[in-house]
Length: 149
Image: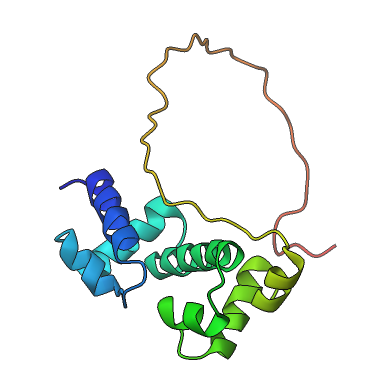
């Protein structure tokens, strides 16, 4: 399996298990790559770590669910893997900029974080016309290192 396929399959796995207790090892095992190399490859290709991706997706889904349903903050915290409503509220506030209560009361806008879609773009392979031109020499002046004035 190449990296593009591995990342795509990993994203499918994460999206289908987003409310489960997901670890790097779970995802790496699913795509048959060692956790160390998968984590490194994922962060190089995607620009953030695997667990950052999972946290951001969970917070985006929690914000959407908070606006569109009557679910309590406690239920959301438990659903998305937080031990307490306080830790969920801190994470929610860092991600969205507002507390869950403020979002629910004021119907403020929440951020979204869409699932990754991997596209490969190749650049280069074009021809370029060039020529080599001889220029006259240039004299420079300055002070050599270690010389005192």
